[in-house]
Image 1 (cartoon, rainbow, N blue to C red):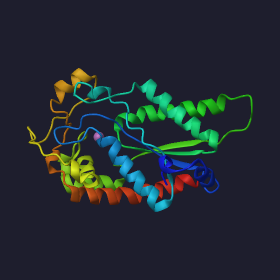
Image 2: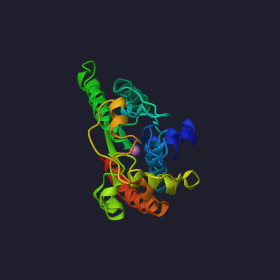
Image 3: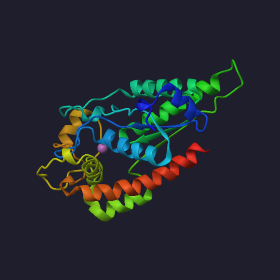
Image 4: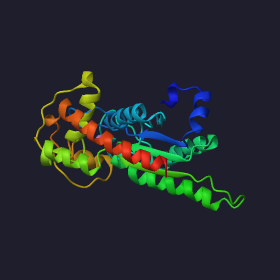
Length: 248
Ligand code: NI
């Protein structure tokens, strides 16, 4: 069930049986020569929509812009400051708390969002803990899951791509978008085939270290069949994880 295609009465009805909601969160940033700028939002969104179909979970609109300051030296990348993204996350959660939601499952597509997600969750809990007006707690719990991080998904990526999977513009994420959006498959030469690796600082430094945007990957190996295998494996883990969290 998608929030954007629901009426308010349907949401009220949903709340009679569940207080949980899934919020896909990603980024709008370069993903190398053949990766889509929307990759990190498209991947968790596609998985969340399938999760919603299979479990009946309510899926919120995707937070498509994340914390991507290090990608800003590449055309088309967009970032929120960590402080802005924290406010966005807190405002969305607090809005939904007004209606009775108390389990917030963020399905994340971008490693750069993790620190900010954790900080935003601490902020949300602090609001509750510091509220001395009432002893009643709304009992809000927030969690996030990185779609690529389950052991089964990591093992499959390794089996499919080995070291060439890399850590940004990975074979796995490019494959997943190729499976979910076959009309947007791009072809490009990778030079060198495996991209360099190294630390991440600011945008100018990133562009110098990683000239075509990739880190450690060779996404010319990406293909939609691998994307389907990763999608199905990730989905199974996410469904189990979501259901345990929603009923916690
Ligand atoms: Ni990515």
